[in-house]
Length: 106
Image (cartoon, rainbow, N blue to C red):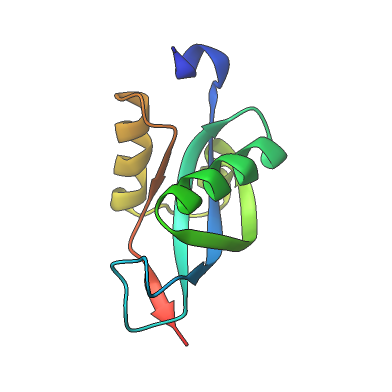
């Protein structure tokens, strides 16, 4: 499937997640925040795609905060190169969602 033809906009948001210690490679925390970047038709679609990707990695999305088109975020803030690289990786691949570093907490 040509995802880019179907979803033309890259979205960004901050995902608050629940970690299943029994199934996850993260064994020392119950929760985490992670920046998510992905292709989507809109905010609701982006949240759904992030939740599905997290589920496939044995995490549960609790809340998606500050979700907006990356093009809008760039107008307001300086974006880290690592986040821009995630967006570029999505454009150059078939992946629909990518995550930055997971920041854990209990």
